[in-house]
Length: 403
Image 1 (tube, rainbow, N blue to C red):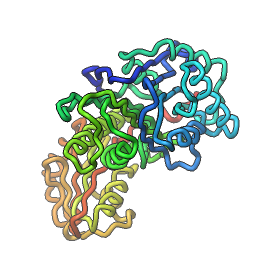
Image 2 (cartoon, rainbow, N blue to C red; image 1 turned 90 degrees about the horizontal axis):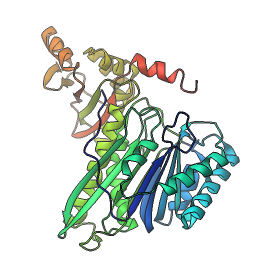
Image 3 (spheres, one colour; image 1 turned 90 degrees about the vertical axis):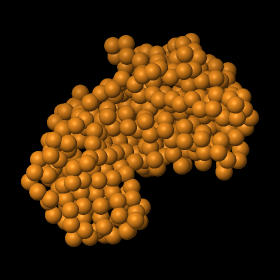
């Protein structure tokens, strides 16, 4: 179930992009991307909660604490994770190298890496990649950058929105990479969203923290949290219409919604592109004790190996859903439990409606995308987690990832 996202996103005022083959991957594949602002601009960032975080994550955290950035530097094919002090030294050196090449402060460079863990990067090859990436910077290089950050992705992921604020046209455009090792609980493998809106770092941070639970933080492919997860928002401030400062204003809400829409679309592309995936499933839990319990139940269902294989086989085996609920630790009413698949009523009052209902549900589950709705019957809490099915192709791919 693969898609090719169209149309191509427009350029974003105040930013240049590039994506080149710098020699970090074989066979001429793009492996190095840059996003460069014309000057230091407001930024907000979030990173993996994995305690084995990669060296570039450590450095990126340091470089974004002041809410300013000018360049995001991304390599694919090597995560620079599990590389100890040597990896940290490399990440800091790469920022100095790019800073020197572009004539910018290395403290305003945000380094990001993705790929195989536990392998050192080569400074000679990386220096060449930086030089080629800098030479390739263009206002129209967005798609090239999106392609350069791919690893096991089947297609480049990008999304954009145009909105009218205070009489001015504002652009929000984002790219992401990710297909496996997806259980972010903060962001995604890598994602970068830029805008030309006039908005400062505190407001961007508010937008980011509000958008994450409704986008990247509600997806899962395989329950594995990456060592490199990073999301960065940047705003050039070159659009007309004035600064958006009041966070209770309609303009702020409209801008925040544009970011959320872009990030949600990117998150869903990651699920669609899940390694070996053939289906995208929205697991919706309703009538839980509260929203937190609803999310806990939804994650238990969405991350269950047995449930995910049932999704693949279009098997309406609702006993597997009950099993996941049982070990989730969430209260539910066995006598009031209800389960629907799209508009098919499968379970009511804790029992299968009929064999015919199961047959119709099986047909609904053969679609590329469907909604599994579970009513716990104990409260008003609700949550959604978006997941993929689990297939033989996932196992085959990951059994030989470094081969």
